[in-house]
Length: 362
Image (cartoon, rainbow, N blue to C red; front, side, top):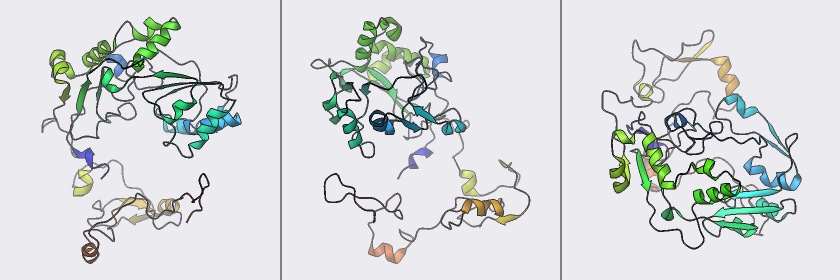
């Protein structure tokens, strides 16, 4: 049922910072803060002068083998995806300490037993782990910094807003919902909020004021609130009491057209095309409900080059009716309940009966 949630008429002109918009970091290089967030909420700039990088999936190899190559994520340009990085970078030292913060690598990355080998290695001399609970990786830490849970700290954010990675990335819910995360109780035991832990560390480094700008977590929530379009619709006092705000959908006159409707309804006379049809040798695209854009053509030589002899991979996407499901009446009556897999035609690896040994592909 994925991607069916992207058709609701949400107001994309309403601004609220998303997941990769920089937040309070002041990082205008590694985030999208310079586009919107920093302009609306000026705060002290920060930067990481260390240019050496290690792909997360290859961290065990970097530590155990001492060298690794990879390709970084580059959200600025497609060409940047082909820029190769090498560890250790020229002039840089190898990694001797790891500050582990965030989701566990165990169970989220392939062959995660590699990370256990990395933690046990003498090549990794010191490990700090900041976590809310005793996860698998916390057992390998030399120092454990206990972080509190979401119920013990203030925060503000929008559900499923990944803006910063992509423009207008608020498409995961039927409504844009911005919530204020209330602090229900004080942090239990020796735990502290992530913000407080980082603030305490920066104080030791003489950078406490620069990091926090003298503001508490709730102060930052208010500052983010003021930088967004929320004050045009709701007061801070009411938002603080209510705890959430549902962004109204756009009116009919200013609402964006339904995505891909032009494709579903077929070409309309006089409608401007995104690009002119190619010249030369053409091949007619199949017509009918499967592909309503009947007049567009594609160069047959390009088509065959892209196809590369794979009949199941046409150069242009088109609808292919399924051999199963409600349309297959007789089969559907016999098997009304069906299990679907993302790639049923692919061979999948499995584990053998012996612990730790890889099974054969079948």
